[in-house]
Length: 273
Image 1 (cartoon, rainbow, N blue to C red):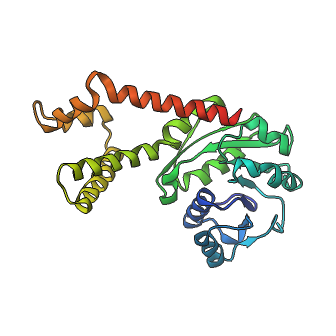
Image 2: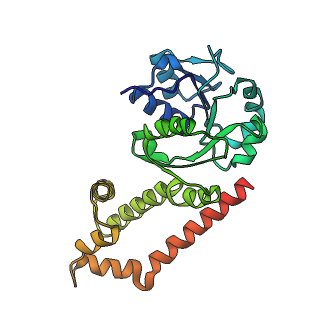
Image 3: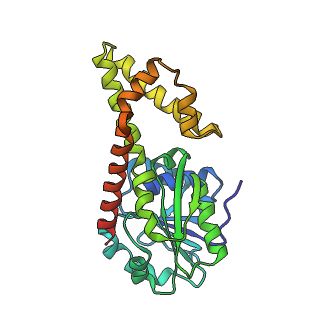
């Protein structure tokens, strides 16, 4: 497989997310000679990746022609410093793909021009192993070919969904963006509960990790709904039912999760306002 974009790709910011995306692109066939990175101090693992593939870096790198895609993976507080020098690099067919949290399409357009093609995307942590899910939206200036380039890049690290209403990205952030942390917390709590029940800490942790990851993979591979799968493993009057009645009696867990997503959604809106 080869990722063909029709021009150079410039990745601005090669931290955890930027580095994960770049690694996924290279694994999926992006020619290293078409990739350029702007980051003054990438993490060591990303620096090693850049060295291994001999990928040019600089501030900004010396591109042979206008980039097909400029990917923004910088922290919001760095944008006022990093983005203005990029504007002269934007050509007539360049699309900006931003994975920067909290930066709205209109805010990004202030740096590049009102008619610039911009896509805003929210990937999540499993993108680092090619198992992420990304939700994207665009402004009115993105043409089908430009959108396809962005989908190609995002698909290299997992599934992709496209939405028309940018405001929904706050809810996306709360569900899939922050969601891995909820699962990690579940694993922490399950581990501690096992320890409290008398299990050796190492065994409790291995059981919890294998159970959470295995259940997730089972869910991914099944066509059944999560609700149906839960019912399938819950015997009437059995141990699982006893535990679920404690967890979600009077919909306690459902209410708590709703409150968590609402809190994360509100925070996302606050950060992007």
